Length: 335
Image 1 (tube, rainbow, N blue to C red):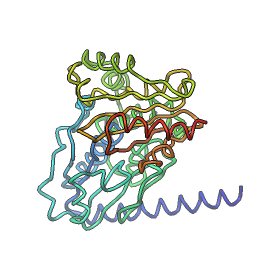
Image 2 (tube, one colour):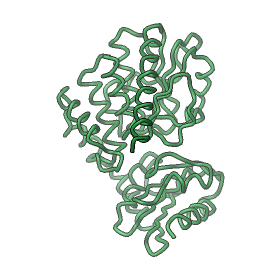
Image 3 (cartoon, one colour):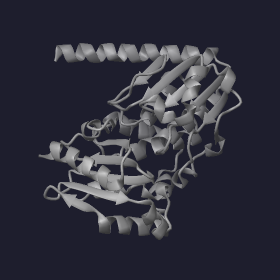
C-alpha cells in the first residue's frame, strides 16, 4: 500500500510539473492551435472547443483545426463554427495542443503540424497513448479528456463560462456513457456539478445528444439489429455495416454512432463489435465490452487500441474477413 501511495504522489507531482510547463508555454505563445482527430467524437470536440475558447478569452490568437467532417450530433456545440482546416498560423505556430488523440496518425493530414509547432502538448486519457509531444498531460485513469481539460482550466486559473462548460459537459457525458462507465469517479461527478453551477442546461444538452435520432438512423439501427451475429453462447456480438446498407437505408456513416453500445447493452453480450465498410477492403472496427473483458487487448491482437471498455482499429480487409479476425480475437478473451 505504501509503494502505491508513493507512486501516486510521484505521478501527481509529475502532472503538476507538466501543467506548470503548459502555463509557461501558453504565456510565451502568440499563436496557438488546438486540433481534433479524425472521426471526431463528443469528448474530442468538446475538449478542443472548451480549451480553445478559454484560451481565446485569455486573449490568445487560436486556430481551431479539424481533420475531418463534424458529425451532425455535435453541431449544437458553442464555437463549432470556429473549426476549420489548416489555419493561417500553420507556418508560425508557437504552441500546438493535441486533445484526446492517442497517436499522431489519428490527426490525419494535420499530423504535419507536429513538425511545424515549436511546442506540442499531448492531453489525453487513452491507455494506448504513444506519449508523443513535449508536454504530456496523459492520465488513463481520467474518465475523459474533458475531465482533464476542466482540471487544466481550473488549476491554471484559465477563463471558463457557460459556453465552455457546455462543451466540457458534452465531452464528459459522451465518453462516460452518460456517467455509466467504470472510469467515472466522485471527481467526475463533482466536475459535472461545477459545470451545472456555471449555468449549463443539462436537459437541453442531453436532448440534443440522445433524443434527436433521425428517421434514417432509426432505419439503420433496425437493419443492423436484424442482421447482427451472436456467437459464443450470446457472449459476443458483431454487426457489419456495408456501404450498400447505408445506401438502402438512406443513412450515412455517422448514423452508425451508438449501434455498438446498443449491442453491448444486450443482457448476455460481453463483447460487441461494429464493422464499418469505409471503402473497398478498408474496415473500421469499434469494440465495446463489459467487465471483465478488455477491449484494448482484443484490438491489440490486430494492432489497435484505446480503452479497457472501448477500443478500435482500421483493418485492410473485406467485411467478412474482418468479421473472422474479430471473432477469433473475441473468442480468445471470452473463453
